[in-house]
Every structure is written in structure tokens, then in C-alpha cells.
Length: 71
Image (cartoon, rainbow, N blue to C red; front, side):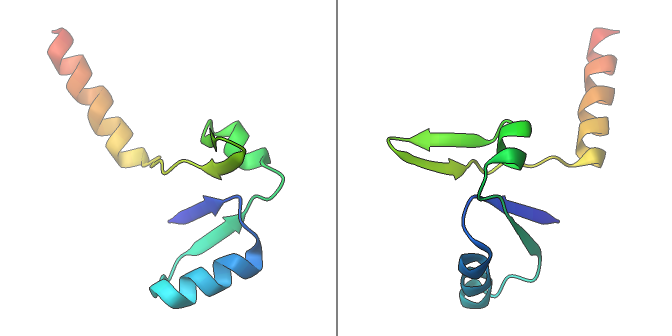
């Protein structure tokens, strides 16, 4: 699992330590990754990465279920 946030790497270190997280957080301070994945969100003047999940296995299950429904 990989998390992406527009916050700095130092901010991520503090957040992971405080919350006991054991996965990597990418510091996307230039908004390139969040923009590419369509997760950059604006709330007034503040920009942040929306919480999205991109699981491969789940996607396959959803596509299979849709195929079954179309039969």
C-alpha cells in the first residue's frame, strides 16, 4: 500500500509516527501524482489529495460482476 499526500516528507514522518502507520507516504508537493490520478481536490484555497483506493484485484472482481450482470 502507498499513500500520497501533498504535504511534505517531514510532515509525513511526524504523521506516521503519531498514527503508528507502517506504509509509505509519497510527498507530492508539486501536485503531479495527485493530478495524474485525478485525486487533487480543492477546498477553498487549500489543496489536498482525496482518499481513493486503486486495488487491482477489486477492479477485476467488479468487471467480472458487471460482465455477469450483462448476460
